[in-house]
Amino acid sequence: MAGNVWVVAEHWKGTISEATYELLALGRNLADSLGVRLEAVLLGHGVRGLAASLGTADAVLYVDHPVLADATGQQASRALAALASARVPATILVPTTNVSWDLLGLLPGRLGVPFVNFCRDVEAIDGALQVSSLLYGGKMAVTVAAGPGPVVLAVLPGTRSPEAGRSAAVPAVEEVSVDLADDSGVRLLEYQEPEAGDVDITQQDVLVAVGRGIGNEANLEVAEDLAAALGGAVCGSRPVIDQGWLPLVRQVGKSGVTVKPRLYVAAGISGAPEHVEGMKDSEVIIAVNTDAGAPIFSVAHYGIVDDATDVLEALAEAVRKRKG
Amino acid sequence: MKILVLMKMVPDIVEELEVAGDGTSLDQEYLRFIVNERDDYALEQALLLKDRLQAAVTVVAPEAPEIDDVLHTALAKGADRVIRVSGIAATAGTRSTASALATTLPGIPGVLPADLVLSGCQAIDDLDGFVAPLLAGALDLPYLGLVSRITVDPGAGTAVVAKEYAGGVMGRFEVALPAFLGVQGCEKPPRYVPIAKVRAAIASGGIEVVAAVSGPATTPLEVTAMAKPEAAGHAEMLEGSVRDVADKLADILAARGLL
Image (cartoon, rainbow over all chains, first blue to last red; front, side):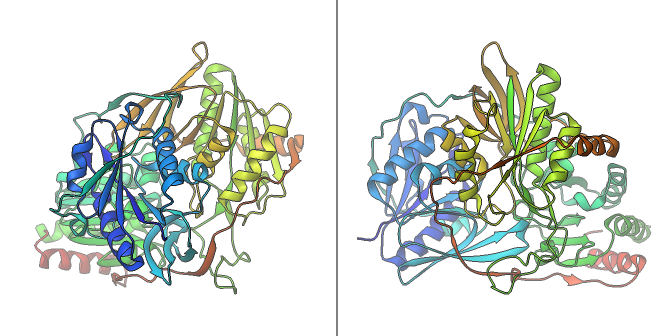
């Protein structure tokens, strides 16, 4: 008998993540075309109540264990591997988010099954899976044939609308016990919230985002000047945060925040999937990059192939002229 | 205290990438390789710990184009020992690489056990798995990824590390040593090293070469096609001088009520 489709029900600080609902929508399509059940796997301690919102699945497999309270990937991957070894699902869909990062990294090794990373879609063709993934920072698309047999898929955020994965239906919950020892060697001490006082970029109508392509820290001034002219704020992609040019709270994307401003100017940003997931729903996106093949141009509304600093400077001047 | 850093090379995506004639892989002819950026941060974390704790830092990397430059630079920055592992194909995939390293590392004198093993927590070509957690699992070491700060208490045999979540939130974890940490960032960017120091490292010929010992066989993924992504949409491209383009943009913003 073919195995079922599993979705890892990711939760953090007591809430099921949006990425989980996206995966439920994707998993629902996949399970239906394979003619199998869709099961959500909920790992935690005292979180049975979270299962109620997972009604898109036919059933929820719930593992409750004290060591899963602040699940590190160590314990969560052990629990999931034990469960999957016993039940042999066709596929396990895991969101590619920071919360699930260690789980998806450790699981394939523990389970000894294939793993496909950076997935943006998966289809069932004659009982096997055809997986579409993005490689090399979004610059290449690959198709991977997987299965039949268990495979772990790390799914990028944004593959489906989270709304399509929500349901008012009440799923059947099956509580499953798994033996886990408290010996992971990894213990959560606390969560540290970012320091208050900086600009909240999720609340801005206009964002000027800078990436590696602005060249050096001195050019941040040009971005600040355009942001001032437009009445917005400056944010950045990962490389700019890594360099210490902007604080982590100004980062858009995977380790940062998701923003939906009215205007997003992406300057010198290539458009890796980790960044795009955090800004793709902005109302108007303008991208400036010297590389005409940069993936950012496929999400932007307007594009300019040129030096980012030169364009920002000229745009600030043009904006000021309009505003008188 | 001993720290092992694992580094690898990845295609430089600033260069134009082309698909090879087989339609399923990158054309190697014009490919340029650079060090995986996260591995560079892992090295920096190791060197910062060395500065504070007098740790001995060993860097190991599978053979790949330009890898000697990276290893010489690591020596020049302050690594104590650098080792190139030959016989792991650069195109082997992450799973197979992790398997070979897990079998090879214990056989290299003085490398394991290490108090800390550090590596980048991801790379742009990690299609079939991430090296760090796969290797941590194979070496049976506790693992935590997305780490961007590490402090070590050698007396207690523990490290306190900060792991990135979202929106600037960090999780502080205590990790029992020995442990494997997948590095995402660092409190400062990788250090600069003058070219003269790199030249001195090259002159010293300090790279050790070790042949890989095959690990348990892994089944590679079956990639059936590779192509530049078909965009769901594409930006309307504005052309002309910088001044012309800026004027056009200002018109667009005004028309959309954004000025």
